[in-house]
Length: 622
Image (tube, rainbow, N blue to C red; front, side):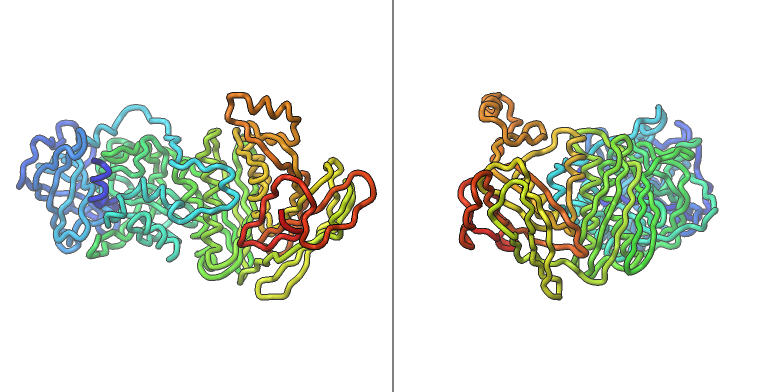
C-alpha cells in the first residue's frame, strides 16, 4: 500500500521563510492535538518559509482522516490558504511544515496531488513522527543495491542512464510511470544535461544557489532544512521543512527521504528566494546554507536529525584538462546504494561546469579509488563520440557500484580522484588487419607483429609489436588475438571462463583490465584445464581433470584453451577492433613450408572468433 500511495502522491520537501507567528518549540505531550480529535471543519494554521529564512503563517482547514492507508498509518487531509496557496497549490518544499490546531501541534504537511485545482494536502500525524524521537543513535545502514555487479561485467562498461539513476528512481521518488513527480530537489552548479537526467529520475529538480558564507541560521519549527547528498563546488540536496525541534533533535519532512532506516546524511540550512507557481507542481527556489548537523533516522513518518552531529562523506576530486584547466572538490554521501550514482552525477556535472558534456569529443579518463585496507585501484579508459561524457560517468559508476555493493566483502571507499583529459574531436582508429613476419615458428623465436589501422578522418598507419614465442608451447596451432585492450579483455574472459570468488581475486581481476589506447596481443593455445574457485588451472593432467569432474562441486569449469602470453604497447590514440593471427609451432625438425595464404595450421581447440562487427581474421578459418 505504501508503494501505491507513493505512486499517487507528490512528496514535498521543506524550506523555511519569514513569519510573524511565533515559532512553536519544545512541544510537550500535552501540547499535541491527537488524531482521534480531528473533525472536518476544524481550523488552525501552519508554518513554512515562503521568502527569506523566517517561517510565516498559512491557514489550515481540516477535511477529515484518511485512515489505515497502510497498517497503523493514517493521514489527515486539509485545505491550505494564504501566502498565495490558493493560486500556487501546495508547494514542493513544504513537506514537514508543522500544522497547529488550537495552538497544539497536529502534524506535518507531507504530500499533495499534481495538477490539483486547490491546495489540498496530506498531513502526517505528529504521534507517528514522535515514534522517531528519542532512543540511542542507530548505526548507519549498510544496505547495498539491488543489483550485485560481477567484476566481469565491468569489462564492457555497458551501463545506461536508466541503470545509473535507478537507485534515485526506485528509492527517492514515487513511480514516474504513473505521471507523478518526486520530492523537490535543489542543485547548485549543475547544468542542463545533468539536471535533465536527474529530473527523469526525481521528477523535479530546481536550480539553487549558495547562501551567503558565514551566515548562521537556526533551525526551528517551520525552518527550511536540507539533506545533502553532494557537497562542495557542486551540491545536490533534498529540501524540506522542520516539523519540531526539541533540544538538538529535529523532526522533519513527514515522509521518507531515502527509506533506508539508520543513515548518516549531512543536514543543512537553506534560504528561500521565492516561490515559483507551476501548473503541475509549484516549488521553492532556494539558496543552500551551511551544514549544521546530521540526519540519523529515515522512516515512513519522516526524518530525525541532530544539530551538531557529523556525517562523514567521501571526498571526490575531479580535474579537467585539455581544452580547459579546472578542478572541482566535492564530497558525496556515504550510502552504498546511492554513492555510485552520486559519483557519476558529480563527474558529469564537473564536465558541464568546466566546458562541455555534450557534443562529439574525445575523453581520456583515469581514476584512483582508495579502498582503505584493500589498497588503491587505478583505472584508465578512453571514450569518443557524442556520448563520451555519459560513458565516462557510467564507467565510474560501474566500478564504484562494484566496490560498495559487491557480494564478497564490505568495502570502504576513502576517496576518489578523477582526471579527465578532453579532446576537441574523436580519435578512435579502426583496426583493419594484422600479419606476422613468419607463421611457422619454434618456441623462443622472436617474431614481428604488424597491425594495420585506419585513423579517424585520416590516413591508414601501422603499429608494430616484437613478440617472443613462449618456450613452453606444445606443437600445433598457436593463435594471437590482437586488438584494443577492451576487446582483448572480453576475449580473455571467453578463454579463461573464470569468475572471482573472493574480493582479493576480484581486485586482481580488475587491475588486469586494459584501456582501448592499448594494443594488446594475447597468445592462446590448446591446453585443457579447469577454472576452479576463481583461479585458472591450465594444462592439467587428464587424471586431475577427471577427479574434478567426478566431484559434486559445481565450481569447476572445464577449459579447452590456455593463455600463454600477453604483449602490450600504448598508442597515442584509442583503437577498436580485434583480429586473429594463427601460427604453427614446431619443436623438432626443420621448419616446414608455410601454408598458403588463407589456410589455417591444423588441429587444436576452437579459438574465439572476432565479433562480426570487428576487423576480419588474418590466417585462415578453423
